[in-house]
Image 1 (tube, one colour):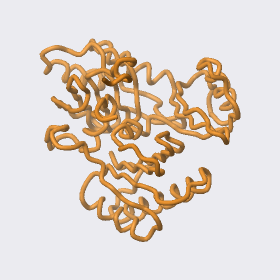
Image 2 (cartoon, rainbow, N blue to C red):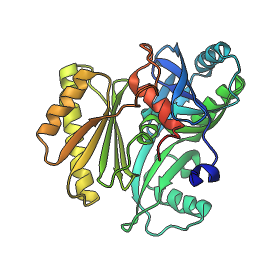
Image 3 (cartoon, rainbow, N blue to C red):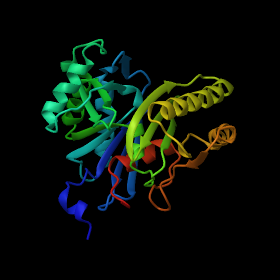
Image 4 (cartoon, rainbow, N blue to C red):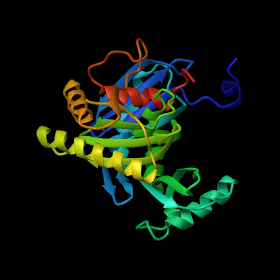
Amino acid sequence: MNLRALLRTPPPAHAFAAGEDQLAYGRLTRKRDALMRVERVAIDPGWFRLGPVGLLHVERQVLGAAVTAIVRRLEKPPQLGSLVAPNAWVRSVVVDAGTIPRDRQEADEVVRWRLKKILPCRPEEVRLDFVRPGADGRVLVVLALDKPLAAAEETFAAAGVEIGRIEPSALALTALLPASVAPVLLAAVEDRALALVVLVGGKPVLVRHKPLPADAARAETFIARELSRTLAHARDQEKLTGPVSVWLASDGAERDESVARWAAGENGVMVNRLVAGAGRVPPTADVPDVRLLSLLGTAWGGEE
């Protein structure tokens, strides 16, 4: 018997993943451990705009047409779904919050108060989530402006789909990582961008997102540099010692080889490719592997 499964509400079986030029849809199995159907539609690049706090504006008409096109292909339109957002839609920051209340609402108010001097907007204008601090009192906060997220939700609602939660792609991917007592660095490459997540004890402590240079050689050098910087920062701030497992969700074999070459020059780094496992993701040439994995991860209900 899985007691946790009995005590928690399962995530929606339907998930959408947005990209710069594509909206993908995934229908998960009842156990939430595999994708049984995938659909996708192309979107003209530029359908959303970014600002200092991530997502700034959504072209409702463009997004709405994409959502409607997918829903019309389905025998039964989903009433509830999750949205995997591009990593660029959110911003992350680590703040020193000290001891925060156990009550979620009171803790939220403390975190927002700490953000007043950091954000270029009022803390009341953002949605946020955070990881409760450890002994050092440092809190990882992931946030985005409320209005453009609400616009995206309203656009889905107009097509008959209620979005139950919005999750950035990199954090959706962390659900697929195997349990590890050692520190983990997840690196994901998607839409010409690099996302990095450091996890300690299974909890994210650092999230970074960087656009990649268009030139392939420069991008390879850039990724190696950012991996080294992130690893060094995590080891210093989190006092990490010993080996670190690096999990890569990449956009091709060449990227895997590039990261393997980087790891060969580092001390105590082991690189693994993040995969879904046999039969869990249907083969399709139209949706990038990283996006398929994020669709699976956002509703993952597989091995505990």
